[in-house]
Image (tube, rainbow, N blue to C red; front, top):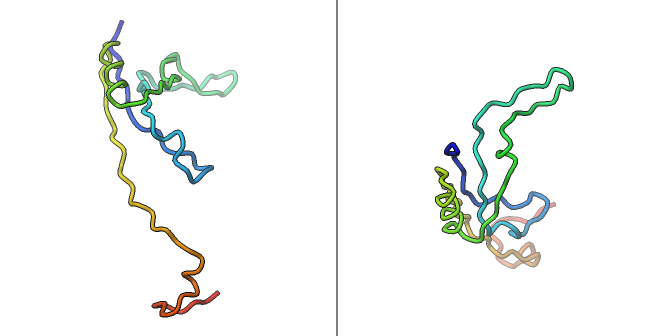
Length: 105
């Protein structure tokens, strides 16, 4: 069995929702060992490197690293970028007395 390189990361949140659901787990993906090629008959691109189609999920980074080490895979960890906290906003702020800038449409 050849040693594969896997990427351990936190998947980004869905662009369809503003919440952070399903973005707290860690994912493991295999990096490609060979380039994709175009099939001359169908025009579809593909390769014989099927492990790149897999994505494994883990609750913690330590579990993902332990799995990669137990399987004998080299790994690269991408730590998530911390986000700035959101400031709570209120619709009433638009009409507040003493507001520093004018309210316009």
